[in-house]
Image 1: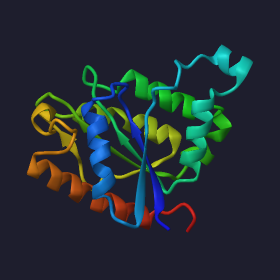
Image 2 (image 1 turned 180 degrees about the horizontal axis):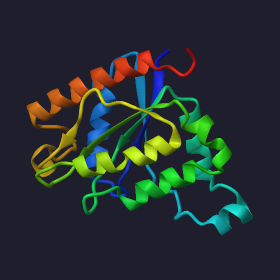
Image 3 (image 1 turned 60 degrees about the vertical axis):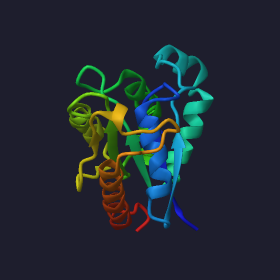
Image 4 (image 1 turned 90 degrees about the horizontal axis):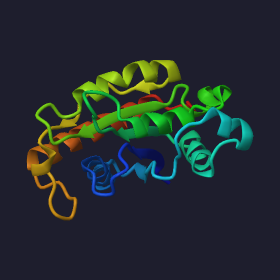
Length: 189
């Protein structure tokens, strides 16, 4: 049976470049892994009063359990105004609640970040901006290869597939390195 990697789409848009990028990973990932993409559409804005009154929203609780039972987390993060996108940061904030759960959900878990943007620099600033968050959560970030897709409007076809061979090759190379890194940093070993 293949190990599960949870893929987290960092955009709310159904046709987003990052959703397309993560979906392309499904067929390119090593066969020893299964990528399970998850959206953040059902995660409300974090509100400590809501948490105190009602606990975690069902979408958050379910996603936390999927992450806790996974081999790794692969995040497809857009870049908004040279930084972390608010909806994705909000999802991570909810997933880190209650604070006592951080070690179970994130502690020592391998995390990779990829991203696509229509701009010239891809998502390099957002990927760098995630580092303090990752440090706080205690994850093991994958730094082996960088994958930022610039000019995303020319990379994807009408059906969401990657039509640019160079981008497909870079994504395959990234996923190969990420899979090897995950194998070497298993939580259960």
